[in-house]
Amino acid sequence: MENLTGIVAFVHTAEALSFIGASRQLGLTASAVGKSVARLEAHLGVRLLQRSTRRVSLTEDGERFYEHCRRILDALGDAETMMMQANAAPRGRLRVTLPTIGYRFLLPVVPEFIARYPEVDLELDFNDRIVDVIEGGFDAAIRSGELADSQLTARRLGPFRFVLCATPNYLARHGEPAVPADLTQHTCLRFRFPTTGKLHDWNIRDQPENFMANCHVALTCNNMEALRGATVLGLGIGYMPDFLVRDDIRNGTLRLVLKDYLEHEGQFSVLWPSSKQLSPKLRVFVDFLTERLFADTKI
Image 1 (cartoon, rainbow, N blue to C red):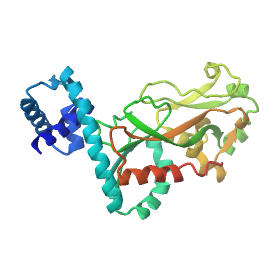
Image 2: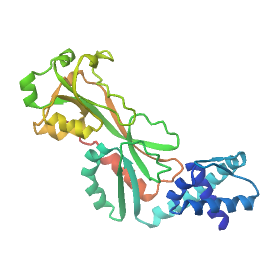
Image 3: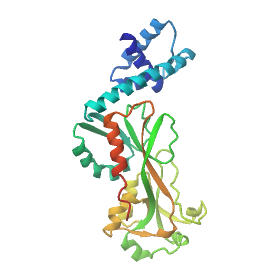
Image 4: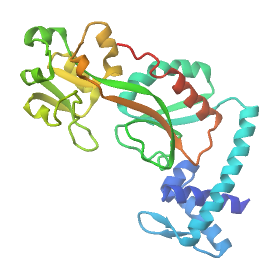
């Protein structure tokens, strides 16, 4: 049993490449994790990890040992999950990270999830940084765009579109653009990605990539909710996800413009560590999101 404890600590450390990252997942101190791995190395008579002041890395022996240990723990996880699914309802803390704007589409369905699964304690981390799901100790993440992390398994939740919109008052004062070229006569509100500092391109059909260079930009911000707020205040024309302004469009606060020229779609997905078995709480959460999110896509 002592060796199994060391193996678990070793596998988590190998996947996080950090004693601190492993400690967050195991609920132990980094020192305790490090000592457990050290005892395992002493028992085996080999060095499994190379330590530095900031990170750890696998030795050649450590890489071979990790592959065997991972398969063993996966098999144990399968057995545990099978028994939990057979004998227990979904329960326990479920940590999910998602972008700040995610509250717009997730929070409206959270009451239904809680009512269905009252023993699951949902912990939501709204963050516009790209969070390391494994090192951060999260059960799942909701993200948009390209999914390049091979350590994560993904399921698509549904598409969304980007739309151009403005207040009726702004359009009454400045006129409504009939074709994309008319945007050069309007005040534009732009979004800047907080992670890269790049401006968000407006994907408008049959327009060159740099056509926005000729448009007057009155305001730039790195938060989509703030961009929506500026648009609702009548400061100009904004470009943002349809789910963010769906209620504003329906109640007349905002109006769509150049709708026939917009063709760019985005995609949200839910992701979880490939090495982690789908526990009952995670399985019902993923199934629930697939069923309920983006079911209402009409504006």
